[in-house]
Length: 278
Ligand SMILES: Nc1ncnc2c1ncn2[C@@H]1O[C@H](COP(=O)(O)OP(=O)(O)OP(=O)(O)O)[C@@H](O)[C@H]1O
Ligand SMILES: [Mg+2]
Image 1 (cartoon, rainbow, N blue to C red):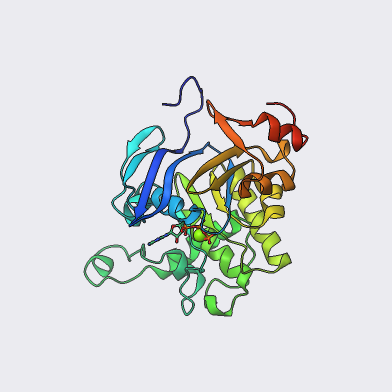
Image 2 (cartoon, rainbow, N blue to C red; image 1 turned 30 degrees about the vertical axis):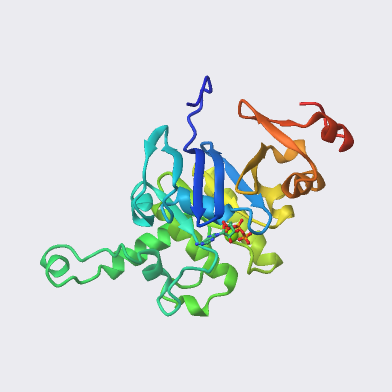
């Protein structure tokens, strides 16, 4: 399936299809995420990005197609099943519990119990250990927060997003997927989240970043998956294209087609756009 490629993609999909009545949300989509990369997924509104990501993170069951994790075919029965396989998703709507403190958010749904009978029978939480582990993890990612006992609702948007990212990174063993993590953030906060994504990548964890923000994509992505009309239109390196060209691919103004996994610009359109011949 991976041909002669020496690198096995961490997460891969071929020919995914998802229909809702007569709407085809995913129309034969392919996907490839390599180890240690930040892969941006971009596309117009309604192109099917969220649907694709849902299929890859177990939130949606595709009608057709195949998903492989570390080269092995896999079927997720739900988001929990994807999480058990090391795929963590940071959702756009800041999925943190506002009234709980940072450490509790880190361990939400995975609380550490006190050792022995206190934890087993009385279900007492080991708050001290959770705080210590959360603190170590935040320090590891160089996320500076004054107090881990601070309720999340008292944090800024960027700090909240940092907590959500830190939590997903703490539990992910294969992939971290982020849906528009900077959409609700200001310039400074966005910059902090991008820095954090970079550090996550540098620790060896591949990141899938869905974004509408072209400057962010060009700043941080190692490769860009361009989604259009329910399928992958192109998979490119940002260094090979200008932002205007990528937008043109996204809207269909620039026609590209894939050839053995490499994107080949349509000759006429490529010449018109002044692209190098691939
Ligand atoms: N549950 C659903 N039922 C019916 N149609 C759906 C459903 N989910 C998605 N669609 C349709 O599938 C298409 C792709 O939607 P999707 O949300 O995946 O796009 P998107 O690229 O994430 O868009 P956006 O950038 O606006 O978030 C749209 O036409 C949408 O209306
Ligand atoms: Mg979407």
